[in-house]
Length: 94
Image (tube, rainbow, N blue to C red; front, side):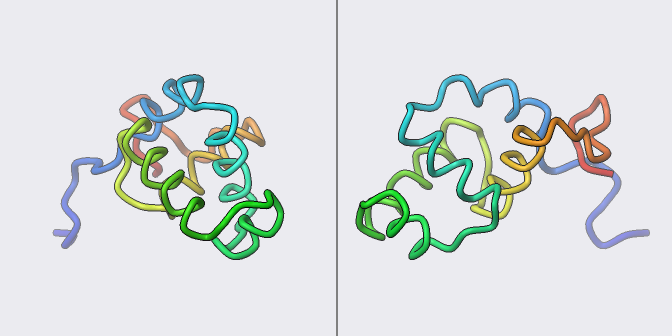
């Protein structure tokens, strides 16, 4: 049996439905994360401090019901490309 278990631990499909709840600035940060940018790159690109980027990431995690910036990046990539990337009906990436 897998160490991770059989049940999905991340509701990516649910997170995708909540993207519309992000503010315009949160959406900017969200899309930068989907492009694989670091906090420093995001800050420079948006003209904000790294601290502000971290605050936005925390809010995005809360709104989307996620646990990490990596998970945000996965959801953002799926959102921006339209690629289902294995997101099954139950919301897990398979």
